[in-house]
Structure formats: structure tokens, C-alpha cells
Image 1 (cartoon, rainbow, N blue to C red):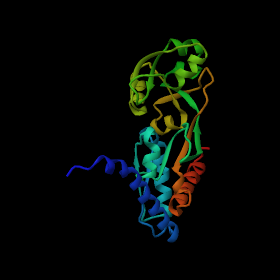
Image 2 (cartoon, rainbow, N blue to C red):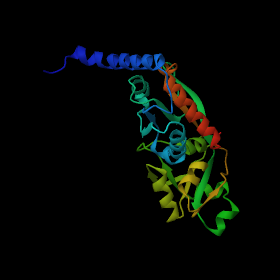
Image 3 (cartoon, one colour):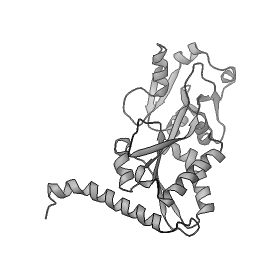
Image 4 (cartoon, rainbow, N blue to C red):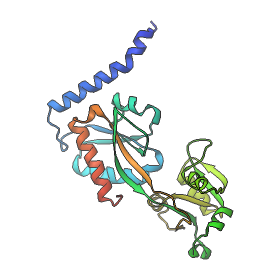
Length: 244
């Protein structure tokens, strides 16, 4: 039997009600991180995993040894529905124009730098003229459209030459190692990826605000003891790791 249109319309509401019931049960019970076997589901862009996930895993293992952590990508347009249904407990992403029922708080920020192949010339820095003449790599999961650094340049009435567009910073760093292309990316993330030090970080010749990351959760989870504890663990771990 095929589900009716009415049933299909009711499905999201039913999921939300079940999620609320779960949260109420969490409040009535006593959450003990040492004893919990809960899987905490964290949504984040895959580019953030090498920067954040190892630290979160270490802290969770120390404070909740029986718990598990699952990281997955999330659709920004469906963030509210995903959080409401309990598919994710928390999302970490760039600052987005969100309103109720999604709540958020700043988590960390990362300044941008230029990543280049190690070369004696790179130690002298890069002038604005050389930056604009160089070939650049743009990183985006979208097939087209300006990235943050290009928007900043456009506001100055300037434009750079994008010779390669790829989907993640790992691929971009590999290209930098084998070419004269420049890559503009968050500095801490660059350090995490380039563990061998084969590339060099250079200061930008123009002003670019740091990328700000926020932590997002559903308002129904405000009083959920497990979610409260997990939010605090994420915030504390980010602060202790020197991300703020």
C-alpha cells in the first residue's frame, strides 16, 4: 500500500514529536557521561574534520569512554529539520543567517593566510601586485560562484586569476606542492593539513576578516541534559585547543 499524501505531510511532524519525547525522557533521567553509551551526532563540512574531530574525539573518550561520536555533512537548507528530527545533535559551520528554532553561538575563528610551495622567494612575502598576477586555487563544494577571498577582492574593485577550482583543501594543498599556484585558506587548517611543513604560510597583502565558525542546535535541545553536556564539551575543547 502506498502512503497517502496526508501521511507524507505528517511524517516530519511525527519525527519532531518523537524527538521531543526523547528529549523529555532525557530530562527525567539522570545523564551520566561516564555511563552513557549514546552516539553523539555532529554535522560539519568535511574540510573541518582534520581541524576539529581529533580534539573532540580525545575529549569525548576521556570524559565519556562508552560514548561514540559520528561526524557527517549536513545540508544547510535543511539544518532545522535535521536537528529537529534528531538526526544530528549539533552542527558546526560558518556563520549563517539562522533564526528560531535553530539556536547558535560563536565557537571559533581562523585567520586566512596564503599557502605556497616552499621557495626562497616566498620568504620575502607577496605584494598585492604579485598576488593578483599569480594563478590561484579556489576551494568550494559549489561548481561556481565567488569564494570568500574573491568577495573581499571584489569589494576592493580587484579580481584574481583562478586557474583551478576544487572541492577540498587536501586536493588544493597537493596542487600547491606541485605548482606555482597560490592557495588562500584558514591558517590553522593549513597547519593541520601540511603536517610535513613542505609548504609555507605567507601573510595576505589585503585585509580579509577571519572565518567564523558557529555551533548550531535545535531549541528543543536546550534543556536536554545530554545535548547541554555535549555542547559544553565542544565549546571547552575548542577553547582549550587555542581556537579562540
